[in-house]
Image 1 (cartoon, rainbow, N blue to C red):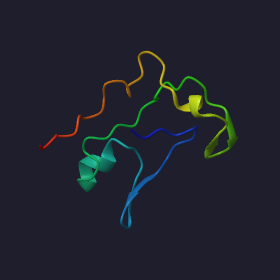
Image 2: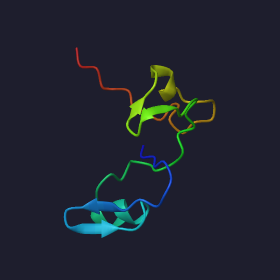
Image 3: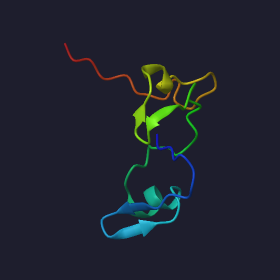
Length: 77
């Protein structure tokens, strides 16, 4: 899951830049199972651009695309 805090991101793979996330996996062949969407985080309070003020800042709210989106790892006995 990719999420951007405002603005229009540019996606890049190697020396090629893509103007949207939709074109990036399609044309690059990378991240085909990834998504770029609002994760509906409970709080978005940051002490600095990349430093949450508390662990609860990363809790998804009901309806978040993060919920039930992961894969269960294969258990080999």
